[in-house]
Amino acid sequence: MLHQRALVLLLPLVANYASAQTLMASHAGGAQARAGTSMLACPDWNGDGFDDVLVGEPGFNAGRGRIVCLSGASLGSTTAVVLWSLAPTSTQLSSDANFGRSLALLNDRDGDNRPEVVVGAPYQDGLPGTDCGAVCVVRSNTGTPTLHRVRLGDAAGDLFGWAVSAHDDRNADGAREVIVGAPCGGR
Image 1 (tube, helix red, strand yellow):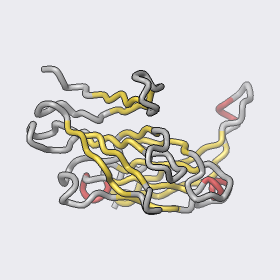
Image 2 (cartoon, rainbow, N blue to C red; image 1 turned 90 degrees about the vertical axis):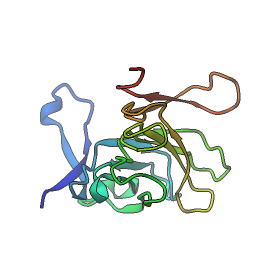
Image 3 (cartoon, rainbow, N blue to C red; image 1 turned 30 degrees about the horizontal axis):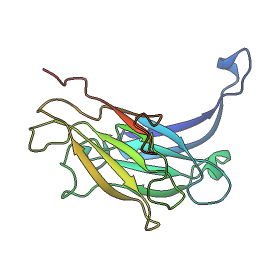
């Protein structure tokens, strides 16, 4: 079986980047998980004083996908420590949704002192049709990350959620805006 690894590299700011790369830690995803398809630095999730890292594994569980939070404190060791992982159930997302294809951080909306995470699932099926795609909001106000809200793409084949990004608050509601890529939308 093919095992892929998401590698976290420290790249010191020096003139010759190629010779200055140092492996800090690695995370081995499961077979065909495609660990590291998306990665995102996030504020300290577990309160240990170190920022943590989110890793998308859209190929996990035959393509349903998952996200994994790695301890920033462990990035100086050989193997990164997994703080938590979140894999959607069959009642939440379709079997080939590719949850974790893209990641973005929002500001804390639920008051738990942790940001909400926007996760793309571009191959999600739904009422608009096959591969309409979706973006999901993950929150942790219970202390455990949970899939909170799903927004589907507009039409079959849109691949809504292929890319996600958080942007400054544009409508003055106190929350960052989400920009969502749908590379096949608008056909």
